[in-house]
Length: 536
Image (cartoon, rainbow, N blue to C red):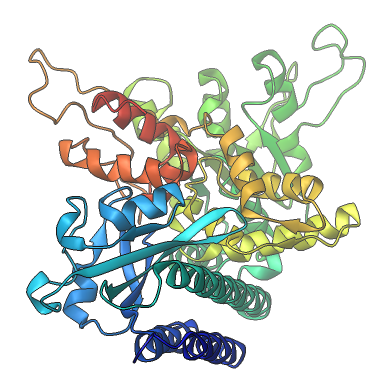
């Protein structure tokens, strides 16, 4: 094509813009729209081997997502670190780049396309950032022969227009993906309410880990077997205890719960067993305790691991003989009560440390049910988030919705506070959101405020040794691996440095976002940065 005729040049530019507009307007799928636009640039204007480079959130690298005139192998080879080469620098700075001769530019990387495959004359490289709402999304880049008479400034101006089009296409894709995720989440929530055996009891989720726990709970519900619920704080132990009661033959009887850790030791005996008139100062009348009040129903003893050793012996009598004595009383009172206990502690460890009676442990541990933490319940976070959003909207009279990418932010977070933390965070987001949209930035800000909150088991524990640490393997992180589906915390390795730095660069130094992007908690990221001497 000759570029001597300026009218012909303008016609070609207008045709590219016109056809690109049609492609974008008539396609909800970005692949044909973007790749069709790159084809037009090549065929009508000689802007060849066009590619759109986007960040990969998993690897932290910039990778070729769309291209025209490149083989699959060449697309795969076009991978760059943030700031690496011309492409990486354009993404990092948000500034255009014009290389009139790639052979004379030392920072140009012939990574995707071997130089021998290009024409044997001066080849130019033009790269412009794809920006939306002042945020870099990617890079649009092309080759062209320097000898063409078409001015470079016209190419730069046109590519800026096309980059804006592509940014809009990517935004549409994001909105569609979010809408699809919303509909899928609503469908899952509705299906869960209709089909899940736990839904009638307020237990929401469809992950295999949760369903196993529900099946176990229902399996034993119609018996009088003592059940021990094990799991971290906030995993829903009280809901499971209520399910045990409601699904049992005792459903018409009382359900009485008491938190053994929330009542002072001086009062808990009276709370559990009751007292007779005059048993102590202030006991002006006889009073039934929680155990007696639960007669004919279910008694839920939460945080049983915090119960005083003396009271453990008295509780053992309840389990063995179904009898109690009130404080200050002398007569035995028969009780027909089923015990459901719960703890976040390791009771076996407590027994070994003489903090918990072995005989009581075996009485309670007849049918243990381990409740999975939220981070092990794959796919349940969006369902629960939608459930809590609907509840919060109704409670506060709002009409908030999750914005694009917000559910993905929630899915990647490890939730040390489990379901309780998720519910509270959704409520806070509903109250703080602007224009009824809970966007990613709001959730990231709330998560950053909570980044110092970690589950006690997640604390890094030094590996005690008389020998100094060797090489890059400095220390270990440990977490109880008894929870099915939980990934143990990995050893700190020297080869993590590049991944961590890339994540920090990609997220502009925001440590919370960087940690989430590589599957770590903010505390774990800071720990690794300290051990690997990463200054940022």
